[in-house]
Picture (cartoon, rainbow, N blue to C red):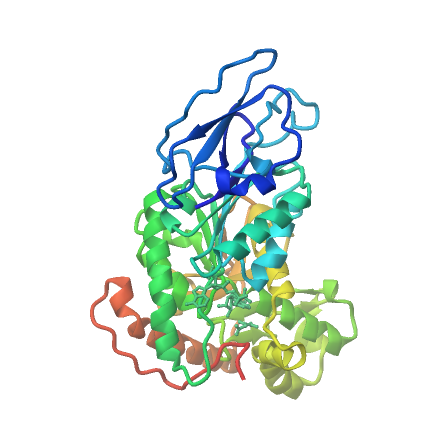
Length: 437
Ligand SMILES: NC(=O)C1=CN([C@@H]2O[C@H](COP(=O)(O)OP(=O)(O)OC[C@H]3O[C@@H](n4cnc5c(N)ncnc54)[C@H](OP(=O)(O)O)[C@@H]3O)[C@@H](O)[C@H]2O)C=CC1
Ligand SMILES: O=C([O-])CC(=O)C(=O)O
C-alpha cells in the first residue's frame, strides 16, 4: 500500500521510496529523511522524515509497524506544525473519511467535493482513505496525484490501499462505492452474491477497525441488500449507522415534479423514495409538496403522477445511460454529498429527506430487518429519526408492498452472507437496477 499523508499534529512523516516523483522539488527547511524498513504489502523501502525547527539532526533509521503507522508519499507526507497558524486556529479536529471504489467514476467527482470543504464545511480538515484493488492501484495513485495538484487547504491526509482492514482504520465515514457492475446475461442473484461477498468483507473490516460510531453509506449496487449484508457483518457498529443511497432517486423525483409543475426545483420538498434502489422503488407524490402545497394540488394530472412520473423516476438511470453511454456518476456524487449534508446539518423545519435505513421498529408497518428507503429528519448530529406524519393511500401501500417483497426476497438470496443460514434465491421478478435496460 502506498500512502500520502499530512498530519496536523505529528512532526513525523513517512515517504514511499517508489513515489519520489510525488515530492515537491524542494524539501522544506529542517526536514530530515532516513530510509526505513520495507513495507509489508509493497516490498518497497520507505523513508521517514521529521521536522525539527532550528535544529540539525543526524537522520535515523525508522522501523515501524505498518498497521499502526502506514507509509506515505507525496506532498501529503510533508508535515508542518500548523497549530500556530492563524488560518487553522478555528479548525475542527480532522475527520477520517474512507471511500471504496475510489478509482471509479463516481469517486472521481466525489473526492474533490469532499476535499474542497463543500461537504463537511470550510473549517473541517479531512483525511481521505481510498480503497482500491490490485486492478486499480495504479489508477488510485493517479487520483492521489490529482488531489495533490488541487492544493486543497483542508485536505490534510490522503492514503491509498487495497486492504480494507488498513484503509478503514479509525474511519468516521465510510462511503462504499466499489462494486462489480452487472454484466450482460448475469442473473440478479449472481450479482447479489458477488457484490455481497465484497460487502460482507468490508462489514467485517469496519467492525474490526473503524470508529465505533462510523457512518456508512452504501452506494455500490444492489445497495440496499449490500448495506444489509454490511451491517450484519459489523455487529459492534449500530445498525442505524448504515445507509443505502437513495438520494439520487429523491433528487430525480424532485426534478420531474418541478418540471411538470413549472417551478424551479427548490420549491419541491417532502419527497420520499420508499424501498429499494431498483425499478420497484416508489417515488411518493402523495406526501410531496410543491411551493408548500400537496403535489397533487399543484399537479392536477394524477394519471401522469401515477404512471409517467413513477416510471420516469424508476428508470431515469437507464435513460441517462442511453444518452451518456455510462451510468450516472456526477449526479450520484452530488447526491452522496446531499446525503451526508442531510445528516450533518439540521433538516429544515417541516421538510425531510430519504435514505435507505435498517428497519427496526418503523412506524409504517414495513417488514423489519431489511434496509428500506424511508423519510427521515436529522438534528445535524449524524443521526436521524423517522418521520411520523406521513399519509398513505391504497396506491402507495400497494407499491410499497411490491418493493418490500423484492427486498425480502433479496434478503433470502444472501442468507449465507448475513449469518442466517442457507440462501434460497427466488426473486419475484427479475427486476432491474435503475441504470439497467
Ligand atoms: N445507489 C445509487 O444511487 C447508485 C449506485 N451506483 C453504483 O455505484 C457503483 C459504482 O459506480 P461507478 O463508480 O460508476 O462504477 P465504476 O465502474 O467507475 O467503478 C466501480 C469500482 O468498483 C470496483 N469493483 C469492485 N469489485 C469489482 C469487480 N468485481 N469488478 C469490477 N470492478 C469492481 C472497481 O474498483 P476496484 O478495482 O478498485 O475495486 C471500480 O473502480 C456501481 O455498483 C453502480 O451500480 C451508481 C449510480 C447510482
Ligand atoms: O444501475 C446503475 O448502476 C446506476 C444506478 O444505480 C442509477 O443510475 O440509479
